[in-house]
Length: 151
Image 1 (cartoon, one colour):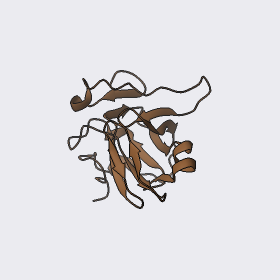
Image 2 (cartoon, one colour; image 1 turned 90 degrees about the horizontal axis):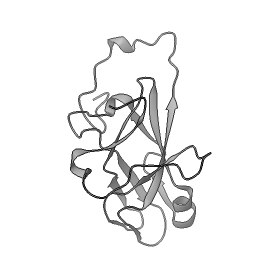
Image 3 (tube, one colour; image 1 turned 90 degrees about the vertical axis):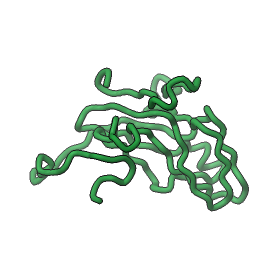
């Protein structure tokens, strides 16, 4: 981890010619996340789209993943889980190094081709609050990747 928050490539994708996420304008909230592989989605099909990225942040923050509105409106694509949540302790987990995979569903009526380098989602860093009764100090440390908490 290099600082307060940001993106890095996982080992597998470091030398693949991909670009780190950036914001489209000075007032954009989201960092554009691109696909790291070509994937063809048939209508009704879901795929985990690799980004080659991992995100680091402060312990009271998360990275929210949102589909790009143009893909949703023009092509019927949406996230399988409506919004992805990347927790701060997902970074460098032993199962998958914190690789951000985006679960995309084709809700349209025709095939949709995702190309390497295509911006498919936006990541927005946010902080969160805890309740007075939170007992997180008693919880386990993350040991795995996707779906590893509460198992």
